Amino acid sequence: MAAQLPIPVYTTLSDALGDLQTATVQAERWNSVVQEYEQRFGKKPAYIARAPGRVNLIGDHIDYVLFGVFPAAVEQDILIACGPSDANPDAHPGSVAAHNLDPRYGPQSFAPMLKGAPIPSAEEQQEAAGAVRAESWYLDINKRELRWESYVKAGYYGVLDRFFHPSTTDERPAPVDLLVTGCVPAGSGLSSSAAMVVASTLAFLAVNDKISGLTKGQLVEMSMENETRVGVNSGGMDQAASVISMPESALYITFFPSLSAEPIPLPTPRTVPGAVFVCANSLVVSDKVVGAKTRYNLRVVETLVSARVLARHLGVALKPTERPTLREVLGRWLGYTEAKDQSSDLDTETLRDGLQRVLPEVEKLRPARTDGQLGVTMEEMIEWSGLEESVFREVYLSWVDVEATHFQLFKRTKHVFEEALRVLQFRDVCLRATATAGALAEGTLRELGALMDASHDSAAVLCENSCAEVDALVRAAKDAGAYGSRVTGAGWGGCTVSLVAEDAVPAFIAHMREAYPPYRGLDDGALSQVIFATKPSRGACVLKLE
Ligand code: NG1
Image (cartoon, rainbow, N blue to C red; front, side):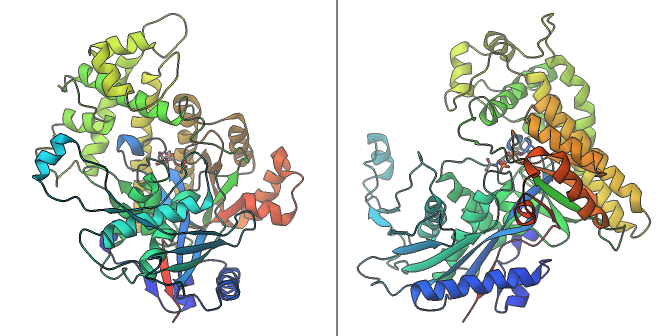
């Protein structure tokens, strides 16, 4: 399985670049980061860690309810040149000099500190039966302000915890010099944050000689855990795509009963006339943290409450304090309990069949009201849940801050189940195209495009995570001949992804430049940063330079 493979470590640049389309441009970037590192730190780096961003082709706002998603790595990536520094390892074990090629991000130095664990509660002390608590490493991460080096520190944390925990080893981390350069646009839905955290985790693993024996799946787990250090509780899609992706494939990532990733080859020029995915940045920066109360976190709460209300309608018994997801409720309705057999969850066929059967039941979440609202008030939602108000608030609202006059249980649930089905259909079309090489041609692309279009409609109407600018980009893409086009990632701004015939890309981009007003004044260089074709590329790796 893809997640069990070792993390690739290459020793030549051509192996590391592999399938990357624009090899010459890429080679220049890699060489210049080496030269710049040498100038700044007086010696060559020992490694370059690379981690790409990702574009989600289909399946948004369903990973946190544990349905499968379908992303692919993009060519845009983060590179971190790194090596052991000359700092005295005894004076400051694991000290870091972190530089960034982007002049907006100034150089930073920091060192992890050994810190005593917080004083345990009386209960914990009793449990530990007098055992002495080990210290742990501490790095100061400012969560109130988004600082570039926070992502470097976040990657470092996992490496310190896993390999240098003072309770298990006397070994101390090496002092590190590192230089970061990246071309994944921030805040655009292409997961620059996951790319930063994965690259940083890899860099610290490499300099401390801890890569061998680690699988890609373990790197995903470490990176997910690391990303929570910057205050983001993500579902795992972004890190898995950055680490496990394979060239010319997307990843079908499932999260239940545990994370698993299956590379699915996309129709390539060998099987149908070539088509590529074009990402277009709306230039509306979607700030997940600022809008969380009314956007991302609200969707998370709405889908969780929907799961409980639907479970009542389906006759699936839940304990009052349980908080299962829609995916778990569906599984239980179909007769699969987590306790029954962790290793044999629903297969794809049963899941598809279950989704089709449950969809009519979603109508039961449609409120019978006359004021035109498809949502319910807080009071109505609590009543529908069947819980005491205090229990409801404890289970669904005590850990998250949300704000709404009406909660859209019907719309969100319909989006989740239909989008989960579209992901399975998209996967099927790709598998079928690969199996019948050459026969499907245009029709395959039209099928994929139609699923992407339906996904965008659902985002706009049911999940309500699009915005006027993103809708305008999607319309322009369709006018310009895209097979399909949709918002990708969290939404409320960020990027669209469109499926476009490969030979039509220049004309497509020219049309978009005219049709989308924010692109009009841009020169060619600036335009290529905001709208670009990308072919699914490979996941993270390390280049060893000596
Ligand atoms: P973005 O903001 O596009 O990286 C976010 C979540 C994903 C997923 C998508 C919506 C984080 C780090 N990522 O992606 O897990 O829920 O929204 O499909 O929160």
